[in-house]
Image 1: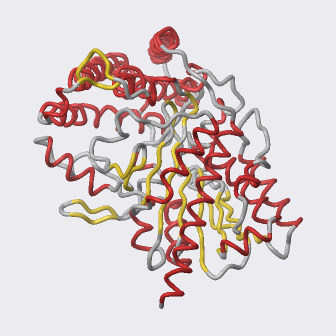
Image 2: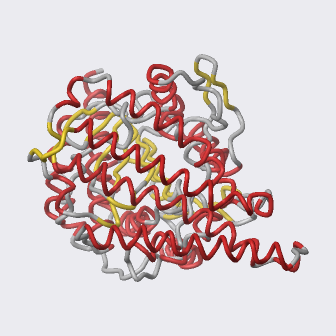
Length: 473
C-alpha cells in the first residue's frame, strides 16, 4: 500500500520565524540523544570562520540519500525542512523501512553566511525588511557554485572548505538521491531534476496548489533553462551558462568567471550509478500574477528590453553611489563588498546576452503572458534591489569598525553619506514594489510542507526505481 506521505505532512509544525544556527544545532544534538540507536551526529568540519558543520546520519538502509540545506545563506526554508524531516525519519520506522535509505542531513551548509542573514529571520516579513537584512555571497564565495569543473577553456578547482566537505561526503557515500534545498525571494514554486520523471510533475503541482502557492510560470530563472513541464526544469550547470554566453555575446565566457559548477552538476558525476538530483525552489513572497498565463498588452520582447533598460539604469546608479567609497570598503573580510563587486562586473555582460537572446528569437514577438510581464517588470526589480543592499551593508560594516580602520573624519563622512543614500534608494525601490504589487507571504509551515512532501515523493520514486531495476536484473 505504501507510506502515507500526506499523513506525514499533517505533522509539520507551525512556525512564525526561521530558526537560528544555535537552535538548529540544539535540535540536532537533542534528537541524537533521544534516538541513539537510529541517529548519529558527526562533525564534518568547520566553516571558514570556524563554525561547526554537523551531519545527521539516520537509519541504516541499503542505499544512501544526502540532503543539505542553506547552500545559499539567504535560503533558510531548507533548514526548517530538514529540522522537521530529521525528527520524522528518527521516529517513523515505517518510513525508513519503505524508502530503504540511510539518510544524511546537513541543516546548514554555509553557517557564516546564515549568520549574516539572521536579521530578517524573525520578521516582519515585508519586502523592505527582507532586503534590508539580505546577504548572498559572490559566486566564488558560494558553497553552491564552487564545485570543481573543467569545460572547454573553463577550469575551476578551488572549492571552498565547506564545499570540500560536501564533495568528500558525496565521494564517500556515492548517494543515489541528492536533495540540495534552495529557495528564492520573490516568485513562485519551481523544480529542477537531473533527468526527466514525468510521473512526479503532477504531484509537485498538486502539492503547491494544496498549499496555495503558485507555480512560477513566467520567465525561467535563466534563459537557457530546459523545461520538462510547466515550472519543472533540467538541472542547471555551468556548462549551460558557458554555451549561452558564448552564443549570445561577443564576450569571453571565461573572463570574469572565477567560480565553478553547482552541487547538482558535481553530484551527477559523484553519486550512485543512477544518482537522482532534485531541487525544489519556493518563495517568501508571491502574487497572483506569477502563474497568470493570459496574454498581456505588451510583447515579450518589449518586456525583456524594458527590464534590461531598468537594470542598466540601476547599474549606473550604483556605480555613481559607490565611487566615493570603493577604496574604503576594499577589505578581504568585507564579503558584502566582494559580492557587490562581482554583481557590478557581471551586470553589463548579462544584459547584452539577454537583449540578444530576446531580439534573435521570433517567439518574443508574441504578447507576453501576465506572468512573463510581471517577472520582467517587477520580480526583476526585487532582485536588482539586492545590489543596493550589498553596498549599504558593506558601508555599514566598515563604519562599525571605523576606529579600528583609523578613518579620518572626512572618510567617515563619505561612508555615512553613501550609507544614507543607499538607505533612501533602497526604500524608494521597496516603496515602488509595495505600491505596485499586492503580495502574499506564505506561512513557513506551508513552505516546509512543500519542500518535505516533494522531497519524500522524489525519494520514494528513486527508491522504487532502484528496486525495479534490481528485480529486473
